Image (tube, rainbow, N blue to C red; front, side, top):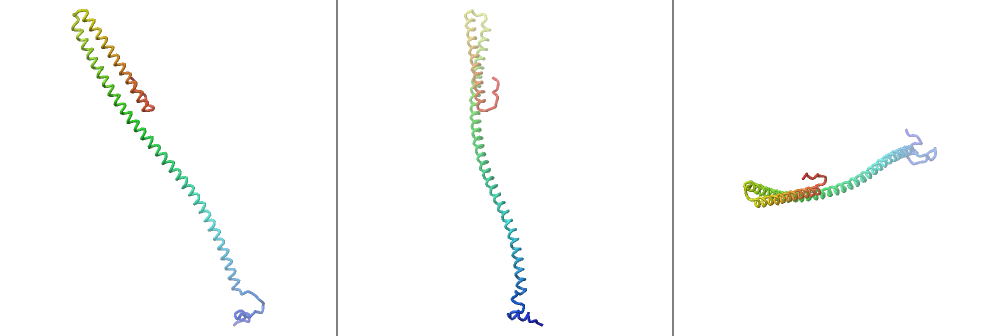
Length: 182
């Protein structure tokens, strides 16, 4: 059974109560309002998440830039260290070459000293066998011995000076190293 109001509402006739909005319109409006409130709340939440994501992205971008700058700086430091290492290796090779040359000179001088000491020994031996010889021969032998000893001392001094120069050269090539005793 239909009432007059219901039939009037369905037929589009004006109702007796006046111009009232149907209930379903109010329900739809309330539902739309609730949906709008919920959508606004969701939009605010998503906006907050977006803002947080943007601030995190900006922080990551800053960190990325800082890390890239650090990487560039570390690469520059590595290149500098490699250049210093190459220079040190070159200096070490030069030092070794200088040491080899100085060692060769020292060996040569030691050979000369040994030869001269042998000559001195030979002259001393001849002097011992010729003791009975004349005073002039004895004086000549003594003078030769003194001259050879002076030459040996001169070569020893030259050898000591060369060793000092070698030690100084090594000390200049290798900082912090102590020169060997002469």
